[in-house]
Length: 326
Ligand code: UDP
Image (tube, rainbow, N blue to C red; front, side):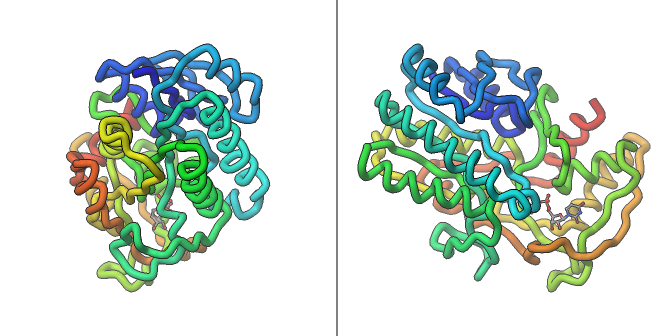
């Protein structure tokens, strides 16, 4: 198949492109390189451009008949979305609409969308399944939920069939060591701990030790990047093979929570093998962090046949550490 991967130079997109190319798909990457990296596009052809550029999109779709589109290009910093919501609604919503409209005009009917656990807001129960109410508490989550809603209407009206995948905590790195996480600024726990371990940062600060959990630190559902990507491949197969109509959504996580302290413990064990150590500090809670966020991914397992294979934390940390060392 010929596939367009928007945002394929970013963390998740670049791993996805590798997986798709490795099973023989022709992949074209569209990325504006604001947060992605040219050198992360190791498979497929990179076109540097922005979804705001309708002219570029029209030409791209006129030139290539795509069988499907995967969309990873979005701004994803919760704090920034609160101080600069305009950026989030313009890029994550308006620019995505440009993409959907050009798909409709060119009769491209299969769309896989990066959504997020942030569409749920404050958890009312855990693990979080697809029936959980979606009440985002920041513009980032709201912008993703708007697209989820738009996709339902586009399926009805225009026959654009889609799958939204709501990620919990994406982490880890390419098991072959070729790709990994590279954010600036970095805000995510595992890369921050590893940067503290390698000496790129002074220390790691635990945000709050007074949560209602066993060790007092927050619990999250860490899902390996390759497991996330395999869910996207299966979702695309599902849309195509079953000729599935409509707009579907799946929550993606291991279904297993780990506390911040447990993550630190595993990192300390892995880095000690290489003679490294870590300075850990304790800080205040970070605003908007719920105590526990864990996915119920039973629907993805049942309907897509998805099964996470790198679901133990030590493997996730080992892959991410290899990338950090490199
Ligand atoms: N966290 C932390 N110190 C940091 C960064 C994150 O203690 O320097 C905690 C954060 O409070 C949360 C967990 O690690 O409980 C995961 O945070 P991350 O930002 O990686 O992902 P999120 O769950 O916010 O999407």
